[in-house]
Length: 289
Figure 1 (cartoon, rainbow, N blue to C red):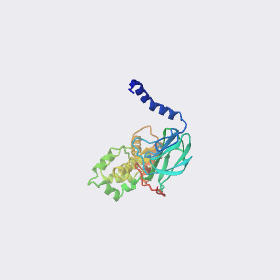
Figure 2 (figure 1 turned 90 degrees about the vertical axis):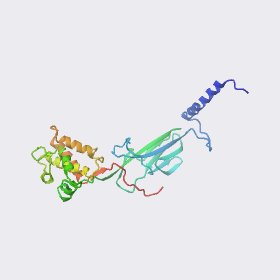
Figure 3 (figure 1 turned 135 degrees about the vertical axis):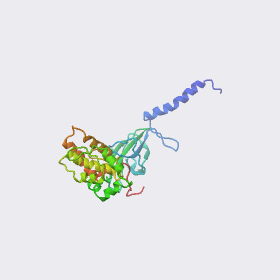
Figure 4 (figure 1 turned 90 degrees about the horizontal axis):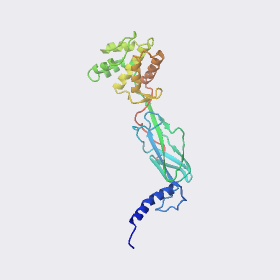
């Protein structure tokens, strides 16, 4: 029979997908599943893992996803189902609640930062995918060298590793360093710098802060410390801490207590305090999946 109503048929074809979506959204009665039929009452849980480089509990755009991290799902019809990230469980009954739990590496320097609760409770939404994001970071020593290091032969050799100390001395002169009298200190030679380092005391807190600022600046320049590392006590990167310390030395409103806090943080880092690694550390798991 000839089709005399092409526009009507086209309208019906356009409506069919919408009708299917509406049935899914309204949680229509479950259909018997076959190789070609999907129950519209079912949903999916996806679990992803990211490296939380700044330890803020939120995935920022520059932070990478981590693969092959074991996640375990428990709930109706599922008992201790473990899969690797990105982990996906499909065909779960809508409205049912499951728990997702992550495995932790054998290496004890890994820390969970997100979600706030663990295990995580997840309710399946019919016809939808619910995504759960876990965040972790790892700690390691800062790698810092103390002012004492920079005043000994090893420090002297490191300063001259490029054949001259001129770049390092220029770098130090660009900072707001001060001496015991509070005068600007711009080193022009190693012996002058060494004497200044060894003479620093907390009588003038700005002087003591200056010595630790100089040491950490050289640590970053020399490759001992990664300035992008996050230091949890200040919730800042080492580069940001250096910037704050340098600014404080010329801030007339900065109190002795504020200068001392900055000095203490730099002192800890110069002595190898733990920082959040800017990149993921080694990770292994007790069970292979």
